Length: 160
Image (cartoon, rainbow, N blue to C red; front, side, top):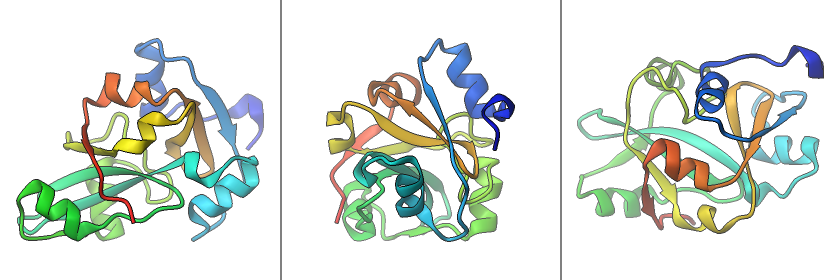
């Protein structure tokens, strides 16, 4: 992806409209590479690459979980925290329908459907994070406070 031809996704439109200062980080997308591939391509710590996960409860109510790239979500802990029976990842086609983005390019910003957002608390302690901008192979660097300002998330401690 050439630097001068960066995509203008709904997430980028929202960040610009909100006056958010961000840096562009395009990279060569690797199918099933996940945050390990993007952190390697960009030369940044995988802990600072934040993945956007679309999950659902037993009533199929969707939600977004933002987690460090090098950690997993304890769905059991999250379900207990939310007082629901279970939390499971959405199937890719369902996640795309809820978010409006393809899996691998999911951004928490400007999703098609409004969903509650849960952020792993320790993310806010980082100096800078790298998060998907709504297209495979395209992350933006932002201050973690942007998540709080724009998404109004609930903070959780569900990393494993």
